Amino acid sequence: MQVSFADARPQGAHVLALLVAGGGTAERLGGLDPAHAAIGRRAIAAARFEGEAGGIAELFVPEDGEARRVLLTGTGTFAKDGTGGFEKAGGALAARLLTSGETDLVIDVSALDAADPAQAAAHVALGAVLRGWRYDYRTKVPPKSKVSLTGIIIVGGGPRAQAVWDALKPLADGIAFTRTLVTEPANIIYPESFVERCLALRDLGVEIEVLDEPAMAALGMNALLGVSLGSERPARLLAMRWNGSGAAGDPALALVGKGVTFDTGGISIKPAAGMEDMKWDMGGAGAVAGAMHVLAARKAKVNVVGVCGLVENMPDGKAQRPGDVVTSMSGQTIEVINTDAEGRLVLCDALTWVQRTYRPATIVDLATLTGAMIVALGHEHGGLFANDDALADQLRAAGLASGDKLWRLPLGEPYDKLIDSPIADMKNVGPRDGGSITAAQFLKRYIEEGVRWAHLDIAGMVWAAKPGTLHDKGATGYGVRLLDRFVADNFEG
Ligand code: BES
Ligand code: MN
Ligand code: ZN
Image 1 (cartoon, helix red, strand yellow):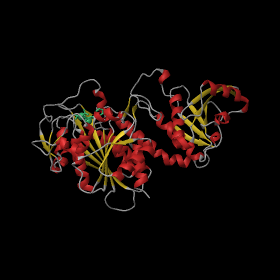
Image 2 (tube, rainbow, N blue to C red):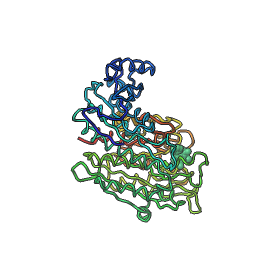
Image 3 (cartoon, rainbow, N blue to C red):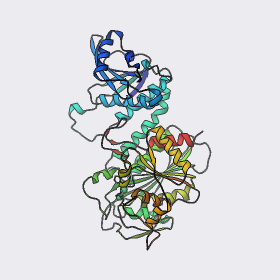
Image 4 (tube, rainbow, N blue to C red):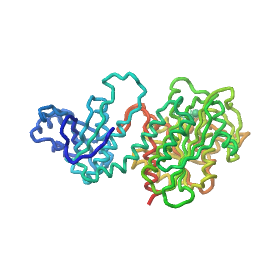
C-alpha cells in the first residue's frame, strides 16, 4: 500500500473518505459539499452513524460528471479513543476497500478539526496499512477477492504529516516482518531460514550472532537441544543486538522469544485436528525479531539484545522420550515428563545464555507457551508474569497504551513446588490445573539473583481466527507494538 500526503484533494477517480469525529459533530457531515448535505444526512441516518471509531456511512455524490463514492468515517472522540480512533478509522477503510475493486483512496482529515492534524493523518495511515497487510499463497484468486486498493492519499494533515508518518512507519514495517514470519508455514520457516530472514536486520545496523548445534552443545544447552533431537532441521540460537544508546556496555534489556517453528508435541504427540496451527509456535521469537526491527529502524536510544531459541519439535527414532532427564546449561536437571511442554525447555537455555553472555538487568520473554493461557484469558490479553512489581506495571501500561493488552497472573512458592521431581531438580510439567503458572514457575528457576524478569504467555494473541480492527484473520503481530512502547517509555531519554 502506497501512502502519501497532500495539501488538497486530487482530481480523478478515487474513493473519498471524510473523517468525522464522534460526539455530535457528525451533523457537520465531515466537510461534505453543502449541495450534497441532504444525501449525506440520509446516509448517516441509514447507517445509524454517529462518528463512532471505525463506523462508516457510505454515499454516492455527483462530482465532475461522475458519481463519487464517499465514505463518512468515524474516529470517535479524541478524549475517549485518542490516536487509536484515527487508527480504527484507517483500519475500517482498508477493510472496506481492500478487495472492493477500488484502487485509490483519498482520506480527508481536515473536517475533523483535530488538535494535531499531522498526528491524525499519520495514525489514519498506520491503521490502514496495518489492516491492509495480506499474505496469500493462492495462484487462482477469484477477481472479487483480489486486492485492488494500492494507494492512499491523506489530505489535511498539514506540513508535518509526512514527518509523523515517517516516525511511525518503522512500527508498521516491524509488525509486517513479524506477521510474515508467523504466517509462513513450517516447510518455509525453520530455524535456519528464520535466522536467514533476520539477517536483513543487518541493513538497519543490528549485529547478528548465531549459535549452531555444536556451539550450543559445547555450552551444555541440552534442554534446548533435546527438543530438537527428533528434527531433521538443526536448531539455532539467534542473538540480535541493537546498540543505540551511544554508550558501549551491556544491553540494559534482553528480549527472549520462543521459536518453535513447528510443534507436533514430539513423542507426546498432539492430536491431528488443528495441529497446523503449530506453525505459529514461533510467535514469541517473531515478536522479538519484529521489535528489534522497529527499534533499529527508528534508531531507538537504547542497547537491547533480542534472543530467539529456534527449534522444531518432531517425533522420530532419535527424538527425546518422556522420562528422559536432561541437564540444562544452568546445570539444573530436568525430567522431561511430556515432550509437548517443549517451549520452557527451549527458553530455559536461552535465558541462561543471555544472562551469562550479556548480564542484562531486565529480561522480557515472549512465548506461545501454554494452551491453558487461552483457556484463562481468551484472545483479549496476553498473560503477564513477573518477579518485579514495577516491571509488571511498566509492561501493563505499555500494553494499554499500545493496544497489545496484558493481564497479570500470580507466581508463588506453592505453585513452584508442583514441578519438583523425585529424580531431577524439576519436571517439565505440573498438574493440569494452573498450567500457565507452573510453566512460568519453571522459567523463573532460570532467572539469576537481582535480574528483573517478566514472562509473557502470548498463546492466545499471535493468531486470530477472526479479523480485528487492525489485522485480518491470521497473524496479528502482537507484541511488537507492546515492546516498542515499553522500550520508548522506560529505556530511552
Ligand atoms: N505450543 C504449545 C502451547 C499452545 C497451544 C500454543 C495452543 C498455542 C495454541 C505448547 O508447546 C504446548 O504444547 N503446551 C502444552 C503444555 C502441556 C503439555 C503441559 C499445552 O498447553 O497443552
Ligand atoms: Mn508443545
Ligand atoms: Zn509449543
